[in-house]
Length: 272
Image (cartoon, rainbow, N blue to C red; front, top):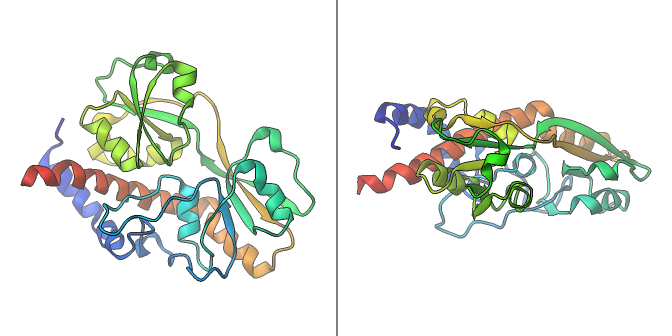
């Protein structure tokens, strides 16, 4: 299942900026090539909550780019404070109590009512579960995953659901990079992540052999919650950092970085 050397030369060109950025900003997983400076570590600035905040990478560990786009938006948002982990069910109340300025994530439909002074805006990002597989797969429907192995990442959104709903055998990896590498080397039958991330990844020709897809079986979108009483300058900063256009920009760099991380892990050991 090794790709041609010509294809990998192309991804090295595509990912050249990513490699330099990752070396400069290993903790964030993405660098200045994403278009904005990294988040402030001072604790000042606007306060963004997300459902899960990744642990800092250990010194010397392999660089791994987060797969949740809202995490990258917060890490690379200009003027933002460090991310805060806030479950979806607690987000609106924390905004109302001035513990947060904004929150981005999957907002439960049953939580449609919001406290006074908190506004919800759909961001147009599909976080619905989508699967990719080798093009020669015999899996053509979600029900075909019964008894089959599915690679997931610990920072993904589908853990537990595929086993419960379809009888899949879930294999959880530390990152999307590791899960996608496992798919490429035949350790699982499918990989599942956010639809919009995977569609961006599949724009690379190096992933053509893994472009068989299962379209999402349900919808799931990202939502931004924002306090109405924020100063105009902070509102503008949050909106810039989490706009649909910004998320698309981040997704292009994210997919490039993760593809490059997979490439390095799959090919570099073969050179020794």
